[in-house]
Every structure is written in structure tokens, then in C-alpha cells.
Length: 430
Ligand code: HDL
Ligand code: ZN
Picture 1: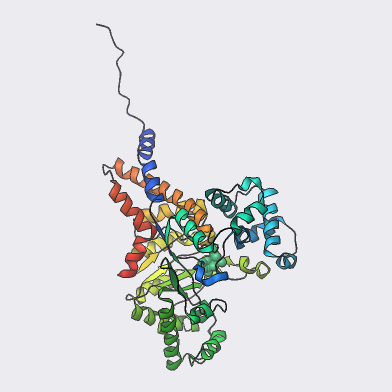
Picture 2 (picture 1 turned 90 degrees about the vertical axis):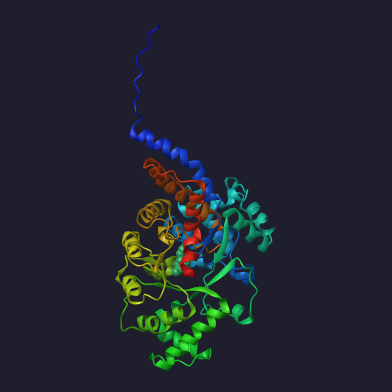
């Protein structure tokens, strides 16, 4: 009988076992995450009924304030010369600076390439006139549907401010919007600059004084109620500076305590707070001029602890706050955290935040929102984020399998639904 060399089964190394487990899930998870419609719960987009307020197309994509800020890093054009340019001239400068003279490797630049590529347009040709002609042939409403289909976004939540002089008339006239656009009542001027805002409310028939008397508070609540009903607002929203304090004897804290939180309880709405922004640290950049700082999150803890009947949504601007935010969410079930906001909406930080959140919160959070200002952006913002979410989920499922718990397709589909808007909708319903 022929001797066979003793084949000693060599257990695969832990590394190769992990690699095999990862490969076992990777394709399936990527497909599930890509195939799960998302609820985009924070955007600056508008239903086509809002006409010129809705931004879309190549020139709006190129003049997105993220790329404006990046262009000024390479160009010594004087700020006021740039602002005197037409949108097309600004877009031409941004394109030549960030795409031709330099590689478009920043997230905002790569995003435009992903979007054009998914639309079947050849950015590498550099033929901006041809690309502009293609967009000029699109019908806005059909194009919105095309963007939502490519992004697999089922519902878009707008950011709607009664204090926006361009937007307010649309609501006052009455507006028919598609059911896939929901509204969020954004009230920064009310809360952050009460002394300047009070006269505006008075001019609209809400008799308020700069002093927060009981009568003023009840008129503020009437204002909130009227606009909540007019918009069918799904939540009330404000962005807050890093040092915002609550409780406090400030106009902001008092208005939140005595008007906004009772209003949200009465209407069963979450109050969405977005701390960490320092507005206009470089005003010469206009909308691109906002900065950020690490936030004192004791404010958020106080909101949740002292108002157990209220629901709070939160996303925070500083990377350094993210771990503390996850721990707060573990402590307060009336807190739902969402998205990788603004300066954290870049692959390296999205991955870190998503992994941290899953490890600390399971699926009880909303993994992403686009914050899109230009309709086309949802294509890249969701494509880029889904790849990362799928990568982290694959790693986590491989870990479950290694522990003897093989998740099935139904469970993975359920988890993806939760992370992409399902947990948010459940949170709003409770
Ligand atoms: O305050 C906000 O909602 C921010 O998202 C700002 O609109 C900011 O300019 C932005 O667009 N970030 O992505
Ligand atoms: Zn925003």
C-alpha cells in the first residue's frame, strides 16, 4: 500500500478564518444594504413644487459650499471677485481648480464624479458644456425621481424655516408636495437670536415682547403650532453653538424650556438638536464660512434627563464628541442619535462612527443622513455611506458567526432597515 505523507490538518489561522467569514458575508450584506430604501432624515432639499429653491445639476453641484471652501485653498482669487462671478463662472473656476489642476480626491469632489458616473455621464471628458446640455434636457420632477431611484432613497426630509424669506411665501400660499418629501420645522432664529426675531413674530400677528412674559410664551407656542400644522412637520430642529447651556436663564434656554419642549410634547414630536457649529468664523466664505468646536454635551444630558416625556434627536459636529454621544444614547432611551453630520461626513470618520455606534448601540440609531443641498448629491452621499455601513455590518456579522450565531437574510435585512430610517420611524412613533 502506498505510503501517503501524514497530512496533519493545519487549523486555518485566526486571521484566515476571519477573512473567510468576512468573505462569506460581504457580497450578501453589500446587496442587502444597497437594496434597502433609506429615509434621508436631514437634507436641505426641496420638493419640485418649491421651484427655484430646489438646487440640482452640474453647476449647483460644483458651487456647493464644500467645494467653494476647497477652491479658495488653491486659488488666490479675491473673495469678492469670486462672489461677483456668475454661478457658471464660479463652477468653471471650481472645476479647473479642483478637477483639472489638482486630483479630485477630496470627498466632495469624488462625490461629484460618483454622481456623474452613476448618471452615465463622462466626467473624465472634462466637457462641461456637454454635461450642462445633458442637465438642461432633464425635467425637474422626473430628475428628482431618477436621483431618488439611484440613491435608493424612499423619503426625503426637508429643512423648512418660516424665517426664510424665499421659502415662507410658498407655505403661506399653500403648496402641494409629493408624499415622499416630509418637513422639519427649523427654528434657529427664534432660539438663537430672540431679540432680533421677536419683532418678526409680532409683524406676523404673534404679539410677543422681547421679554419672555407668559403672554409672549403662549404666542410663541401658537406660532410653533401654526407652522407645525402648515408643514405637517415631523420634528422641530435647531443647530446649537458648542457652548450652549441648558438649563440656563438665557432667552434660548427659556424658550426651549417653556415653549418648544411643551409644544413637542403636545404634538408628539421629537426635538432635534445639532450642537457644535460656530457660524461665520470666516464670513468672507459666506455659507462656506462656518466652523465647529467640541461641544459640552452636558446640555444634551440635561435635556434628556430633565424632560423624560420629550424625545430628542441629536447629531453632533465634532468627531471628538462621538463616543460621549453614544454613551449618552445608552443612558437615555428618549435620545436617538443620527447621521455623520457635515465635517464628519467623510469615509474615515463615517467608518469610525458607524463601528462605534453599532458596538455601543446595536441598531438603535440612524446610521446616516445626507445633509444634501443639491438633489444630485443624494446619489453619491448614499452610495459612499452604504459601502461603509455594509463593510462594518459584514465585519460584525462575521464576528457573530465566529461566536456560533449565523445571522440569516431576514435578520440582516431587518437590521439594514433599522439603520436606514426604520429605527428613526419607530422612535418617532413611540
Ligand atoms: O445647520 C445645518 O443644518 C448644516 O447642515 C448647514 O446647513 C451646513 O451649511 C451644511 O450644509 N452642512 O452639510
Ligand atoms: Zn444641515
